[in-house]
Length: 605
Image 1 (cartoon, rainbow, N blue to C red):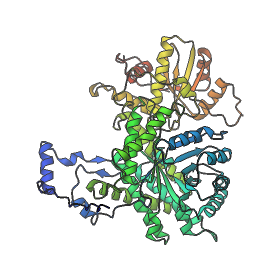
Image 2 (image 1 turned 30 degrees about the vertical axis):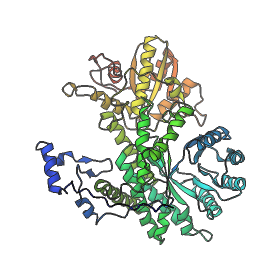
Image 3 (image 1 turned 180 degrees about the horizontal axis):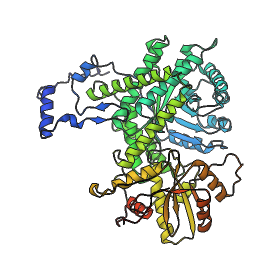
């Protein structure tokens, strides 16, 4: 047997060490005398990032922190499959079985109705005791786990994501009782984590990295405090906890986010009197973010998924799920699933990202960023705990979430945050690979995403110009969303040269919805209260006012006279950009050649 090769010392004698002063001197020269401090930028998390970091950065941290090592070793490639309501899940199971033969190393099922999921069929297709399988659900975990255990006959591998705190469950007490039953039933299974925190809920709604960490800590603190009883210890609860995290395209921040989570996890468990090795057993399941996906120029989603997956792996995730690039507008298909499944394979086999744990360790920038995020998140966590912790502080959490999401909408509208294909480098002649009408009418179309305000305007505009060119007799009303008129204004300003930007006036009261009225003759931007739009939608769709459970679709159509009368009766108001008609604004935002023509316009009432 050959001797094992011995590592050779790494040395680069031809490179002389450079001091911080020398680097700063070079930066100043390259900037032609401009102060490097002008390159400092403010992050959405509320702190500044320097343009340059050197060895002093580690000294300020008290030396290089200890590298973060995953207890499980290698990370897994775990695709996600959605099982809709009233489905037995056979189709999703078949797709998962096929994927496991083609490079996947597990499966994650998102269950709309856990009691409908055919566990026996799953066990027939997969050896549950040997296959890493996760399940995300809102309720019914105890029944699902009982059926899974009976079908497997042996301890399960994988995880559950059931987080009533994050999902604001109205029956929290009974849900916590169910969680205790699940933890007791599964605590003898060393490779199964039964208490998953759905941190992705916040990440996919616009929360900053700091907020995601702080909200996760506050949620975990609640479970650690409330779930233990005479049958269940704090150590049992901690051993069952794991994190489901959404990873966005902000490459270095997402790496630092996962690293900061692990560091603060040790601090949290220490506060509960648990040993350091308890924190080392934390597992993180990372999914590419739905928040960053777009329907416009959708192949750019592949690029976002690539950086997101890299961040997840380099940040220390134990399992990675890459979404399909066309999931917003296409049913599951082999081509998109193959691309998604193979991306982690490429990262491991060709980029060799599986060979080093905590590759970011020792980086001046990433260690500083990790430390800063950890400090900021811990401070916010303490503020939430002072306010009673979750769920008592839910109102504050939702207010922070709304504020950060709106700030991101504004950055995208104003061009400060670039989304390739959506607000920069758009394809003005793009041919949609889907039916915009059907998509806007779909109840499953994700309207919570960062690009939705920009995207829905593009889709509605395309429909309007089609209606005008074909001289369609029916009119349409498209719900653009809350405060989207402000996004329209910001986006429109960016299309004009600075010297030509007029003083614009607009009216869009707090809490109202943005709407586009479209006919062959005209297009008008309007606004309405949720009550006004809801009543109008019920009238157009023939739904009685007292019928519960009606959710207005984003696209309403009727003959022109009916729609005009409904708009007037229900009191929708016009939103105007002084000096420009809606048609001018839409033409410019659509990327059409004709420059907007100033027209007389009065301020909205």
